[in-house]
Amino acid sequence: MYTDSAYWHNKLLDFKDKTHPLFVTSCGTFRLFTKPKLPTHRPRGRIDYQILYVASGKAHFYFNGVEHIVPAGSMVLYRPKEEQRYYYYGVDRTEVYWVHFTGSNVKNILRKYGIADDVHLIHTGTALEYKRIFIQMIQELKLCKDDYEELLVNYLQQLLIMLHRIINTKPKGKNPLLMEEIDTAVRYFHENYHKSISIEEYAASHHMSVSWFIRNFKEYTESTPAQYILSLRISNAQTLLESTNYNVTEIANIVGYDNPLYFSRIFKKQSGMSPSDFRKQLQTDRIQS
Image (tube, rainbow, N blue to C red):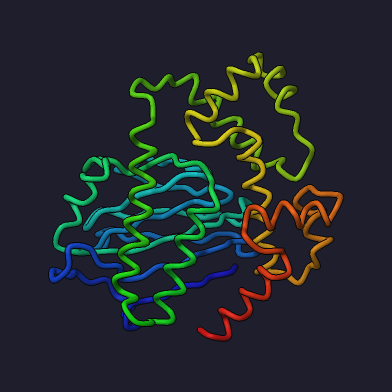
């Protein structure tokens, strides 16, 4: 299991802040590889808010006593004093990012960004931008540079703005059959992203036209199937660069690229730096923190 987290003034216990409209108290990430199960159960919840982003694999969450299997590309919101019960399993290779926050105006801020009081689950699709925001929050809360508390709030608001845009573009009348088709595709891509996937063949095998599948997949995930697969490959490559000693050629093969030079070009285009530079930056950040 890999974990990386940071807490305001190293306060591990939750607390309520009434002096700021919005205030970030802690954030972090879990990547479950070897441990068979990671359970969390807070019967009385916490006194702050929490957003969790399932970046890879899947997780099992309970809302009002009902289990929901939450796939990658989803965010979960818990409010103060709500029971928190969720499980990660090693077999699912779950990767989750989280942030706790409080403040005197959180409820109204969430409403402002289109998050209704009864919403617990938002399907966002997987995107490197989400991971980038969480990673930046973790780094800021570790380093505590000038104005870091304000910057943390800005990162959280950026995340909320992205959620607001997704909520506003979702179709109002959700077709359960269509949602099931897209969820099936998402699971298939997560299980087979490292293989050669033909969007045309996938659509045909599920009795869908290519144009219909691409249009509806993008409507529900904010990316085309090809972009979604690419983000999975790059996201998992970043995880391998951070948590293993595999070289770039080995990582390229693991995530589905036979040509390491092509992989490096794609990685740099998506991440802003080469795989080698990405790994060096991670090592530098660890030393500084």
